[in-house]
Amino acid sequence: MSTNPLPPRYGAPVTLDEARRVMAAAEAECARQGDWPMVIAIVDSGAHLVMLHALDGAQHASLALAQGKAVTANNFRRATKVFEDAVGAGGIGLRMLSADGVSAIEGGLPLFRDGAVIGAIGVSGMSAVQDGVIAAAGAAAQPG
Image (cartoon, rainbow, N blue to C red; front, side, top):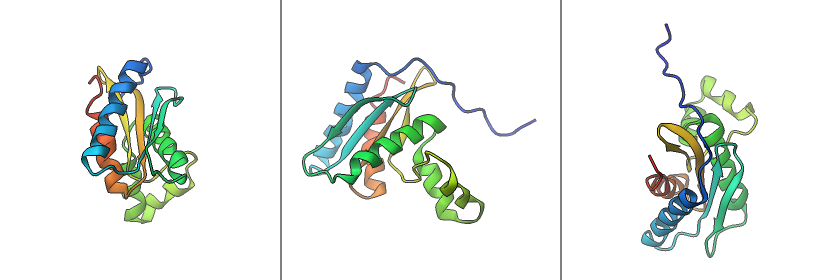
C-alpha cells in the first residue's frame, strides 16, 4: 500500500469570472508591494491560456516564464516550488531538468474548485520568492 496520496483530479475549467477574481487579487498584491512589475498568467485545466496581464514595467522574458509556470502547476497539479526545491537539492532531483514542460521556478500554483484542479496561476517579474507571493495572493481568491 502506497503512502503517497493521489494527486487531486482535474475539474471543469476555471471560468472567466473566477480568472478575473484571481487576476484582480494578484494585481492588488503587486500594487500593495510597491507596484511590482509582474506578468500574471492564468490557464484552465487543459493548460490553455485564459488570461495574461503584463503590468507596467514588466520585463519581456516574464511573458513566457509566467505562462510556463502556470502550465507546469496545472499539468503536474502542484506548485512549481516543488520542482525548484527538487533541483536545488541536487542528486536525483536534477532529473527534473530533463522533463519536458517543467518550469522549476517558484511562482506557479494550481487553482482549485471543490478539491479539483481547474487551472493555475503563474507569475514572473521579480525574484522567485516574490513571484510566489503574488501567485499565492491570486490563488487565495480562487473558489476553493
